[in-house]
Length: 293
Ligand code: 7UC
Ligand code: FE
Image (tube, rainbow, N blue to C red):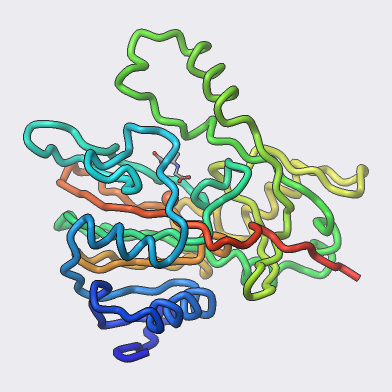
């Protein structure tokens, strides 16, 4: 690919997405699976150019809660505290917890693509943990413990109250969350359908419980250990496997959402920020069958 260089294990591409050929798009997807995170520098795409680009990456899927939608493009998830024409568009302070996008749904997305529009003067980046490397780092004993295990995932702890929820009883809202997004089950070790990598599939934000083949093991303890070992319990973000990727206005970020958990890094000060996000499927199963033999 023209204009591709590797910087700290991130593939950085200097090429306008609006000018990419079909071959380049095809290559780009390969690079995402190889490197995990891709930054497409200094784009001048409009919102609808960005959506068109997303459509070439995969099958776009609008976020299930409407309050996040861009008014003209339902595929665009807007994270923003900025008012446009006096109206609040999108939702402020999204994703400030360890998670993979849609891990609480039956089929989590293959790709997340973000396009920051307004970045605050203070640092605003995203933290990432590579959960394929996290799996590799586990002891052989821990790998054996979680083999064949499953986890349950729910949005319950991070569902955001909508403007229309004001004055509704909390029990009614919780009931709605459980009816609309019932807890889902995913393997504890996801087998990447493209790379074949094994991915430790737990997140501090969405994983509620795990169950293990061996009933004698304390599953709650094991989940706690997995979150600690992968770095997700480090509230200082100094764990050696946490990477901070800084965000620049106009750069597009594209990552393998099976492989990474991420955590937004919003500022405590209220400064304007606005980011567009697209999420896409790749037509493959979320996890391929694993043959542990
Ligand atoms: O508002 C948010 O932090 C959104 C979060 C609950 N879900 C993001 C996702 O796509 O899983
Ligand atoms: Fe997210």
